[in-house]
Image 1 (cartoon, chains in turn brown, red):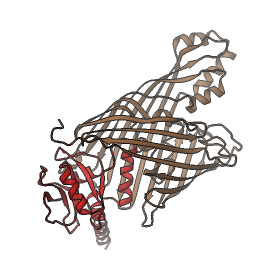
Image 2 (cartoon, chains in turn orange, red; image 1 turned 60 degrees about the vertical axis):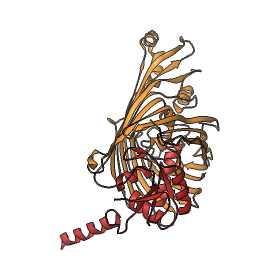
Image 3 (cartoon, chains in turn cyan, orange; image 1 turned 45 degrees about the vertical axis):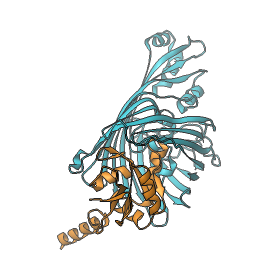
Image 4 (cartoon, one colour; image 1 turned 90 degrees about the vertical axis):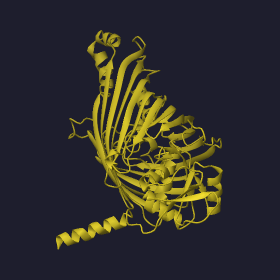
Length: 387
Length: 140
């Protein structure tokens, strides 16, 4: 298939590193102690080794170390590692641990150098869910249909099937270890699948997309006084995102809307155990897991601009609702207006600043909350180098 | 008057978009052993942003010529991006594992040398010149 093409082995090494600072008012958000004088627990560094054996075949591996509040703690992990074979423009395969295609930016969420913002809009690209939405392990198939004359046929697709890995320090694991007397509690993934479709519209610069991801997992429980069970609760998370991107000269506009359905149910064997308990014992347990069944709705819009002096301002606004059928009550929503900019010192080093003007606190982790105000701020700054 | 104003604004938008209004030709530069005889902007753009790894279904790899004004003209008129956004796009490709960074050369002699060495590489130029073992294909 590759006769006549020169194969090469000349791996390239690249990487990036960044240090950030986060400060919130009134409540911690994303990073523990962010509201107590701010936190520098916002670090990441990566080494990437890639080789294109031919125009059709290449392989890439990236190791990442990050410190994000209670996550990471500078542990070095395999961020991704896979082989990619492009059989034809319409068909290619990826095998290994691959960044997960979801919406406009999930595949690139860890690539700080690729955008103006520090955090993608948290209404959809929640850093708390990064651990299990970051990548899939399995097989992906992708390709594009493009026609120079009939541009309405410019469609690309990216589908995958496999599983994901969830680290012990994933925020749900930490949340439930804090809430329940359950040492050894863990979320274990069973399978993951999904797809992303993208259409380049005839209007130059406009593209539309749709993504769907389904993850199935289970929880093990070992609550003192009750039989320990490795598979006590089934957990299913399905997420769909509709995307729009429009670039016109130096302006770039993006808008996305997400539906995120979480469903958790005790397996029949564990349900029997709970049913045998008196209500005062079983109700707190049922209540602790009730919040895992949610019907989330969120959306955002964002505008970026490229100036002539290496400064890239942006503004974004997003809304997050933990339950789409209950949007009005306090604690049911989180609205985020973010203004910030990026400054490129040179082709390797850049800095970013952004402020999130927040209204509401839905799904804000309750590490620490010293205010009941609905209005609060999150300030983030970062300096980074990529090579 | 309102209609006239609308047409004027629309014309300015189209002019700024730098699409079909480019006045000078840009050329795809390849080895004279390569199979391509004609190419259009859409497929060249797809190759140089990493969306495709072939031209006319024939596998190839982009080679970026950094000389000016060729680089800026090519990025603006064919890739339809700013140089900064173009570079950020390749970083996205690299750090998501989808591609390695394209080869870059500072001067045209180095470009010619790289193209002669590997006939699956393609680059670009504002000017058509005489060079042994090299051919220039207008980008339509």
